[in-house]
Length: 233
Image 1 (cartoon, rainbow, N blue to C red):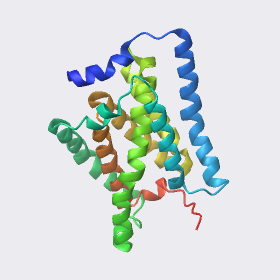
Image 2 (cartoon, rainbow, N blue to C red):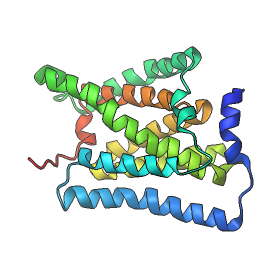
Image 3 (tube, rainbow, N blue to C red):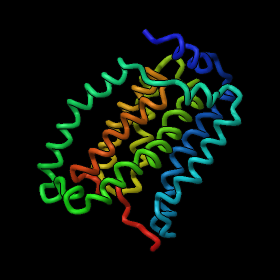
């Protein structure tokens, strides 16, 4: 059973919405989460703007959009912690999926396996810290906090569809890396993160879970599938 906190958070999503409102939200969702990766792709590969430089304006856009929604509370979002039960759940899943990812990397990228921390330890350490702080926090605001709050009302009676569609958009967002493993891994990761957020409504829970898998991917040699290679220096 969900806690009363989660039930209160979902009240806004459970109400009926008009056909006009439903149409607008559907159009907006498709335009934003379908068009945004295409725009980012264009800016990265045509104008050679590094992806990390696009994270700041993207985060400002989504933070502003959430701030101006009367039904949204940053205080509630940022003060909703993680229970020990959910932490144990996150670690239990990671204990199963993490080794599977490591074995997959070892079989498919043997020359890259653990190469990053061995060859560039200090840079690897920087990525282990910067990736969660900059990239993961931004992605989870966009794809979980904003997406669920804004478009949850479209799926008030079908949470599975909401979770599945969120994972599809999350995977589509990774087309910018031009790597099928990136898209596939992001889809399954998106399913897990969306399910976790739907169950807990904890931003910090999905940030923790996303950070664990992201750091593991960069460590075991799969990071090239999540890197554009575009720099402006």
